Length: 340
Image (cartoon, rainbow, N blue to C red; front, side, top):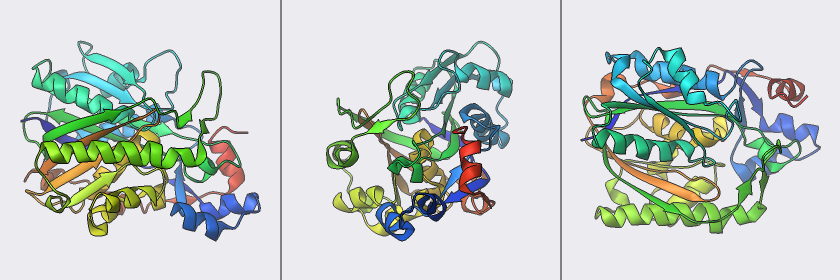
C-alpha cells in the first residue's frame, strides 16, 4: 500500500472581494459573481511568494508526524509561479525544512496540475523502494492582467502532502492521466501575464480532459459515481467543477464540500488539492474519494483514495482556518501582487 501520510495547507490572510475589483473597472459585480461563482479571493502579502507559502504548508504537513527528516528522500515542488526562472524552489524548501542532502529534488510545471503530476512520480518512487517518503508541495502566487477575466479568479495558496507506505490517512487505490496538445492557456518566456483562449478553455480543454480522465479511472476500477463520498475537480471558477461533475453523473452533495473556490479563488497548482484538504474535514473512514486535476496545455490526473482510520488524528480543521482573514482594497492588491 502507498498513499498520503499527512497534509498541510497555507491560506494567505488577505482577501479582496470580487465587487472591489469590479467597481474599479465600472463592471456590475453581481453579473461577474453569477458568472464565476467567486465572491472573494486570497491575496498573498507583499513579502510572500510561492516558496514562502510552500514552506508554511510543508511545515504543517510534517508537524503531526514523528518521521525522521532523513527518511524523506524525495522533495518535489509544483507551481506555475516559481520564484526563480533558474534556481529550484525544491532545494530551498528542503533546506528550510532541515531535510538531509541525499534526496531527489526537482520543480515541476504543468499549469494547474504541476503538483498532481509530481504526486504520481512520488507514489511510483515509493512503490519502487527508492524512498520511504516523498514530500509534494503545490504553491502559487497567481495573477491575471488588470482588467482581464483572470483578475477575478487568480489567487494565492499552498498545499503539501507527505506520501508514504505506513500510517496512511488516504490509501491510493489507483491513478490515471489523460493528456493532449490543447493550448487553451499559455505564457511565453519573459511575458508577465498569461493569455487564454476565452471560451476555448471550456469544452475542448477543461471539460474534455477532466471527463476523459475520470471516465477512464472509473471504468478501470469498475466503479460508479455513487461509490464516492467526496469528489473533487480542479476549480478555475465555481461553475466548472460542479458542471463537469453533474455531467458525469455525480450529485451536488458529493462535490460541494470541496468548492472552496468561491471564497479563496483559483490558486492554480494548489487549487484542486485545496479542494481535497477541504473535503477531508468531512470524509469518513472507509469511504472513497475521487480527485481529478486539470492543467492547461492540456491534461488531467485522476486519483481514487480510500479514507483510513488514521485521518481522524491527522485532520487539520480546514474550514475553521479559512475564516481568519482581512480584506484589502484594490490599490493594496496591486501593491501586494507587485503590479505597481
